[in-house]
Image (cartoon, rainbow, N blue to C red; front, top):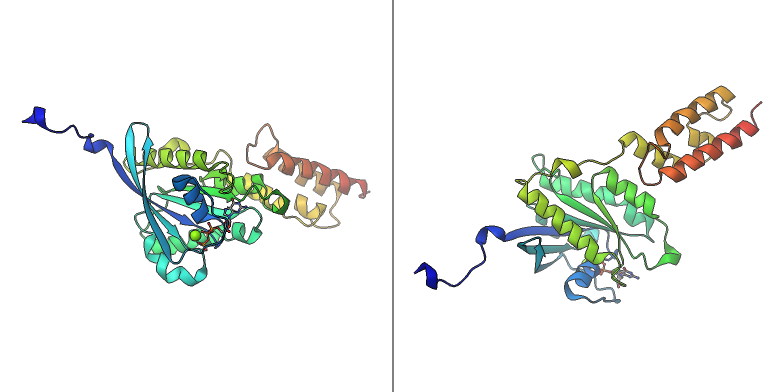
Length: 273
Ligand code: GTP
Ligand code: MG
């Protein structure tokens, strides 16, 4: 009997996962998915109405993975429709448009919406998030640079990719890494392997880089009051230099932040007696 049975794939090796897309309307969520699944790009904007659902098969190592993709509408109007699709998700594709600062600033609100819908017992720790900095082909309009996006993503333990659904750049690499990371979690009993669960820099370093980037002048950059003394400026400088020195800090944007701090000190000391 056994010998005549049709050869079937080992059932334990196949896996079914659920992924969702999140991000503001028009950032390119549907186009990213279409580029990967259908190898094409649609330039006309066709807003997703509520949710689009699709199934695709991929291979990771020797496993066949059946992926259920729920492509969410980004428009606030569809909140009521998409809110029930957050649960039982293993992976999230979180997208912003590098030419729309608002869509980058909105990423925190998207995480908050998901957290709220999962409720107090919902756990987002073991969900794999991949951040797509999309539309990198539109270089002229770019206003969120790579280090800013990467810093946001990596300080949360998320993957980060620069993508263009139009040219296809970064899309296959992004999906491949995303699926491998999800399978790693599944094979680890649903928990993130400890090696890739934390960023290789501290929150203090990430916060300092963000603060320096957004500072309005040299005083603000060093975190001292206007009119501070040489000693105060030097003390603040030393603290930041230790925190952000390129030999010690690998956070995205740390080199530029370090240079900015050096220049701010020089500029301030010139005018302090
Ligand atoms: P909603 O469904 O409303 O939430 O929007 P969405 O995020 O799914 O956006 P969609 O994929 O429909 O793309 C919106 C517009 O951006 C369309 O006109 C696309 O052609 C365009 N677009 C998407 N990705 C890219 C890209 O990488 N480069 C360029 N230049 N345009 C893109
Ligand atoms: Mg869409």
